[in-house]
Image 1 (cartoon, rainbow, N blue to C red):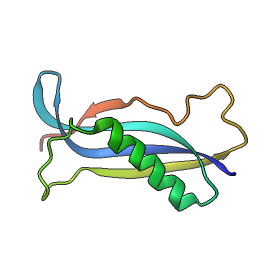
Image 2 (cartoon, rainbow, N blue to C red; image 1 turned 60 degrees about the vertical axis):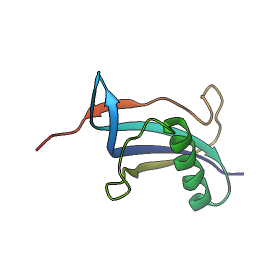
Image 3 (cartoon, one colour; image 1 turned 180 degrees about the vertical axis):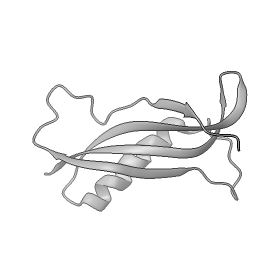
Image 4 (cartoon, helix red, strand yellow; image 1 turned 30 degrees about the vertical axis):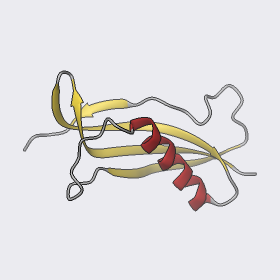
Length: 95
């Protein structure tokens, strides 16, 4: 099985953040073991959606976005958190 690390950027996430509802983005890394890279990416996105379930306040006509910034094929996940969790957040411009 191939092992991948996906660096993912989330954008346009409407959430309660720092005590108020605002648009935020994030970067995160998810690790997936799967031979099909497209299936692996879907699994990475699904793990993020699961972790954020119930926190995202976007309307259906204003969806958040998940964008794969980088994909690395790695030899091993030794010493790595699999599939990964957590986020590095940033506040999006209000302009």
